[in-house]
Image (tube, one colour):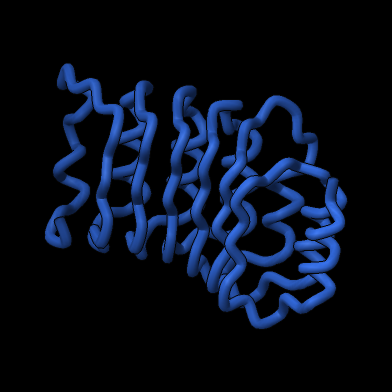
Length: 172
């Protein structure tokens, strides 16, 4: 798939495809346009966009409209905190698993955007590994929110210390 371009999705809205699981891993030629077109498949449940380096915040705005999405993998994409703000505002209550591993532009603000006004969301798995600008401040926000995350990954985050681990461990 590393040779796929946006043209593959150019006329997707004219087809009768009912995609539920889509994996486009390592498709570095895809841009926000392709994801916007792909999001016309309202029944998407799993969307794997790992290592699609040209995807940014506009892609998240389109993804936020998917009502049945349960798993979203964005590892290594070029998203920022504002993209997660867009995702959070439109994100349906169905999202269970979110992977942001290696998203270099994310900061502590992404935590507040994801979990401010937390209501019916079912997010239980969150991978924040290798996010270099994520610090104890972001993890303390997560701990304060008391969101019942069952699986949290924070490997290779140089600004996270024992303080975060202690705070997260003290959540009830």
